[in-house]
Image (cartoon, rainbow, N blue to C red; front, side, top):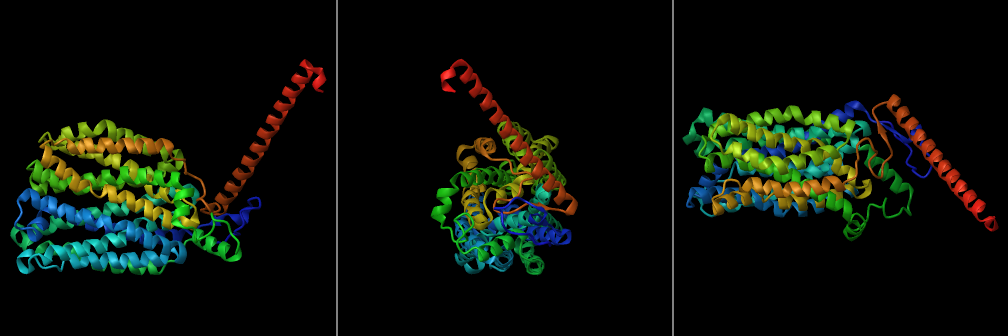
Length: 501
């Protein structure tokens, strides 16, 4: 990693451009994506096992209430995510991204592992669902610092011109983790049979999280701190009287006061992305099996096929966003969600396998529009000094709202008897995404706030420098033209009114 000078008060020169080490960038992406994959591995397993967990931990309830109760246990941990975001965000801005991400993956893997060890309700009674809730709360606390920290880690390691493509691999890890979790559930239920799987086989996917966590911890612990944070730390140490925009001690009151517009943009983006995510990948398996009486294995296989397709689309959208920008995907995805949610659910409810697949595919492509650019947009909204704190708290407040999606959707369908309630839910959220998409600033190919430009190599650094000076020259020419125009206007006034001369 080539170090750069930290001063931003002087004109940009070649030494002010960070040259990103490609091998370190790849390791950073793998380490960050693996932790995110672990988070969504649990979401995938839990979503696909909701009906089994309902029977294991809530056996006295009706089948409908069992599913709602299991999904509610999934949603309750979102209440502590803002607390986790607050704690890990402050520590991440003070101690560094790498240290905090090592801590979050330890807590996350251990809490997921513990779920696989909890005895059933038949064995220990009410203590069983209580222990399940405790484990989920521990997950929620750790996840509060996970995605925001991982997104920042990748963004601060990425060259400006490739941040969209590099960032897309973070949510590639999310989808892959979800896919592995869902696939493992299907494989085990097929190999073990329904009876054995319900007795103890469901525990295996949760136990599998421990070795994944150990691998992730090893990869994260071996990484260096991000270039942007190193740059900020060096600058802070050398400038004792830095202003509030570069100070690591800015209070949350100051953050909300100074960056409230950025916080609202972050909230809007996260809500539209995560509501769509949870609706499609967490709620739909239960919707297909419980509400549509579709064979469980068939419904799971369709979702798995959809997710495999999403893996291929994900990096493509990130790559294209580096060319045309992030805004077109946010606006286009939100507009598509608004217009196509109802037709998509009409296909899903048709009881025709081809149409069911097509309806889910529509929702999946729209979801890709958001996930393909989210990890590159969110870190770019805030400056380096408060990036982790601001992003973690706003992200997790948004996820707190979005996390209620599976429970809310299940409850709305049960109470109304209307199978199109999830579509209406998505259409309302699409309006939030549409407004946010129009209001947000374009961040593609721009340096992160509070950091100097980052390039892949010296050749790209020279191109950035050339563009920088071309931009300055253009601004000078524009100013000269304005001056010339003002002089002409002055002369016209003098000609009309000689006494003004």
